[in-house]
Length: 388
Ligand SMILES: NC(=O)c1ccc[n+]([C@@H]2O[C@H](COP(=O)([O-])OP(=O)(O)OC[C@H]3O[C@@H](n4cnc5c(N)ncnc54)[C@H](O)[C@@H]3O)[C@@H](O)[C@H]2O)c1
Image 1 (cartoon, rainbow, N blue to C red):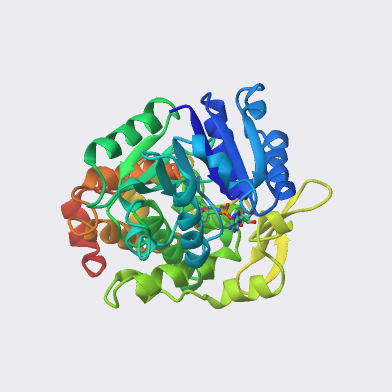
Image 2 (image 1 turned 90 degrees about the vertical axis):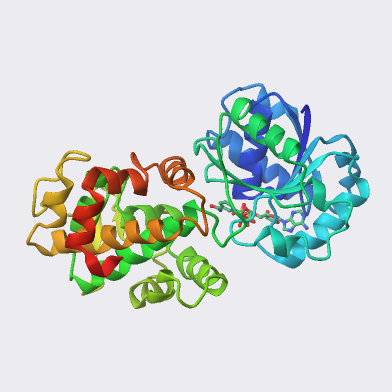
């Protein structure tokens, strides 16, 4: 594979183009207009998106309205345009009209099933069409979720997975064509549980993050993660997942619009990109944290109710600690682990892809099944029977 094209030069498309150029490929990066594509490339250059200083010169920018002919030499064409099925389907038809036979076309969609994307697709395209779901930021996140279908030649899918592993340094997890695939299905459940249970248990942001993240091997707690992702994306992502999941799915027990989140969005507290979310930094460099009950910022606290300073210590002691933080950790983790377990075998054939998706997509030190093993499956079932 020597030539690639990426369509959509936003957060993801420009980052994916940078990664491909870093791997030595010549890349065409198109957005609706060339200026937007150039802007995406400039953000990668200024934002540490490249490892190789010579790589930006391997990217040519252009417009998907006037420069589609540039795709004729591409071996791999990645669609990373806006998350709208009509936009994507129109692009697929236009791509198929110009691409060379045998080139691979993939979508970076987070929420639309492959089965829906190929509805109305030219029959010449679906055998060459995959979902390749990169994580943000593409340069740093190892996970690549790969979704294929019955029309694909298994040898082609294996070649694609090998290329992503060997040339892009990805950890590829092959996923079935199910809502949210694997990492975001479990990750969003974990985040929804964390937000709802923090309010239900009357916890402060600092306590909640201190008990939920590092001790269980997650890089941060959920509130810090939501500040990074963007608070405004929460209802969008949760609504979209809930719309695609069956009524009996455990995810449906959480509202996609927690009042806390709705109020934060209304008040412009959209996370780091807005300068304020669950935490905010003051001009003097100190931090303030949002009080979840009074909805006011106050100085950030560092006291926590139990010793939580090392990762993956005595998890049973945390889960049974007689404090709101202990009960909070128990509620969130027992439900999240039960949720992950409920996905086998319908969503994933075994524990392994789920564990790998959470390790490489969310940076957890242990995947959910590895955590279950560490804590003890029988112990969990005895102590938290209602989570099953
Ligand atoms: N943001 C994330 O964290 C993330 C992570 C994984 C996957 N995704 C998926 O990646 C895709 C892109 O997301 P994003 O966050 O980069 O969005 P974005 O809004 O930052 O960028 C989308 C870009 O596509 C362009 N575009 C729209 N229609 C186009 C067309 N017809 N031709 C060319 N360009 C067009 C827009 O102008 C915009 O620049 C979506 O499918 C999204 O679900 C996003």
